[in-house]
Length: 423
Image (cartoon, rainbow, N blue to C red):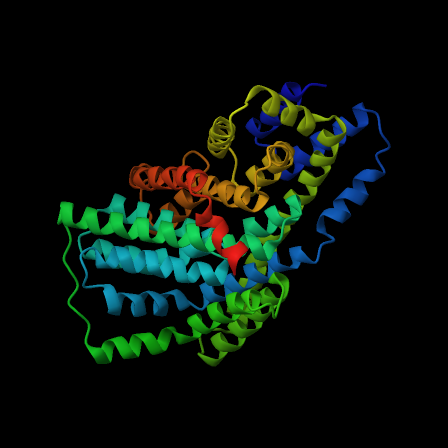
């Protein structure tokens, strides 16, 4: 069976709104039965997909981010950053992006980052006269930093699929993550100066800054503990996720921001997301096993290697494919379907797998804010009660900035690779 037939069948299942996990797992099982091969390997694949120590980091990070979300610690973080830079030109926009960057270093989740900061920043910015489409686009794009700045759940999953070092992937995410933060900040300043449709914040007093900063210290401690323990070699990503969960639980209860009822809600939400992710991973494992037996990844790899001789053209072709796929698949599905298909060609080209992971994540970031499936679009629409068209209007400048970052990553690979290979 050809790759085109398999791809057509998968697209048809997704168009018919079959859940991604069952589309992948069901098609994979059907391919194995058609081969024909014994189907007793399917349960082994399903179990093996989740029998991973590295995957323990996913539910732990999700639980930690949900606890912080329920405890509303994002408010303290945003107020602290706002007190220092809110009076700058476009200061609230800058404060929003910086807050997204810091919270990303705690949660590892794009959705949690967009929701946590958006709840606080949207009313604050719109009340000051910032155009709504700009506000929505800024926060939707800022939320994508949650999967770039470590810890990142997609980077964990990519590391498991590609058998790459998760710690190196985390380190590689620092450069592009900081670059995007500064790029978004620069756009916020330029846009605010050009539009002049907002009311600047008065400069906060020293006492106001001190009070706001003290309230944000618990969040900073969590971020430093999680990231610092990984980079210092004290803990693995899974262990640091557990550490972050314990610290966030203790701190939120100590701050009287957490209750048993809120903890139950956070646990339930984290469990739902974890189960969804793990079922998709299990289905993708069966599908990956099937297409490997059909030699689909190897054939695509050979096709690309033999017909695209130039490295730049190869990456351009991969980027265009991922961009198109991102219009129709959510981020994790995109990762689980495309990495097994493209990775053999990446290795055959001698492309660094750590670099490719970051390149892939930048394109996933774009998928999070491009219609019709962009998850962050719906998160912002939900918390702002705005029309989806208004949110989409605001994200296009940030899509272009992310595309420019992906291009820059190819021509300046040290943006991602310098830190993991020199520190």
